Image (cartoon, rainbow, N blue to C red; front, side):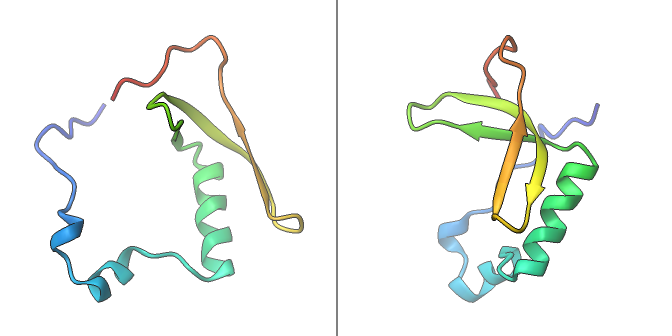
Length: 82
């Protein structure tokens, strides 16, 4: 397992707005490709609630026709604690 203790998020408030465009995925083809990659590689996704709760899930299905995505999560797994 990789250790990311030495990294920290970018200071987004300090970045000029055009610089943030580097991180944006806006085109439908780009979005579909990114979602397919996340799904195919079984990359864990953190789903957060407005109450601060968070759970790890996997992207299970991408329905481009209906613009819906589905997740798979273990109901018995403990909440994500970061």
